Image (cartoon, rainbow, N blue to C red; front, top):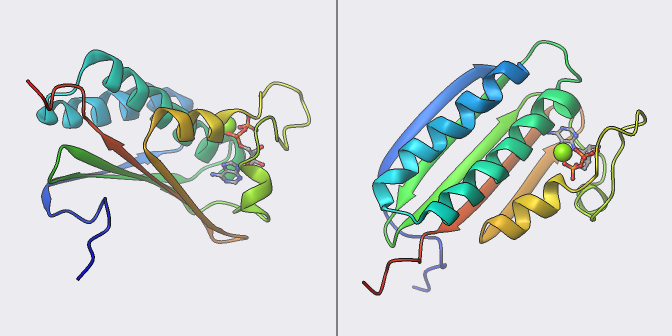
Length: 153
Ligand SMILES: Nc1ncnc2c1ncn2[C@@H]1O[C@H](COP(=O)(O)OP(=O)(O)O)[C@@H](O)[C@H]1O
Ligand SMILES: [Mg+2]
């Protein structure tokens, strides 16, 4: 049977449930980074993961829940082959057109405070980004990061 690149065995897993408050954004990125540290990543790889997690968590808060109450669900699985699978999910408003939302510079932020580069950052700082969303139900972001920096040492 053909195995996908990211279909390896799960060797460790953690889950976090946090209120959708911007005060928890730093906590979320630090927690994910600390858990991924088991895979002995390079500093630059961890910095990438932190950026990607920040973007995803911010999106849950400002877009998914529109700065109202809600819960952010974070699951990190460490897979064979030094791969982290990071899922960040909300039960907020959802996204009408995911491929449009993923375009660089696309934003629905009318106040002009957002750059529209969140998905682009998530995509370029990880090895794979999957976005699934249903209007009125919520959004799930799955990112895979392959820690390759030290595999030859
Ligand atoms: N979790 C989410 N829930 C609802 N809408 C979202 C979510 N994440 C992203 N979006 C939508 O996708 C758009 C693009 O997101 P992003 O690339 O992060 O840019 P920005 O956050 O700067 O607008 C957002 O403007 C928003 O309309
Ligand atoms: Mg964003």
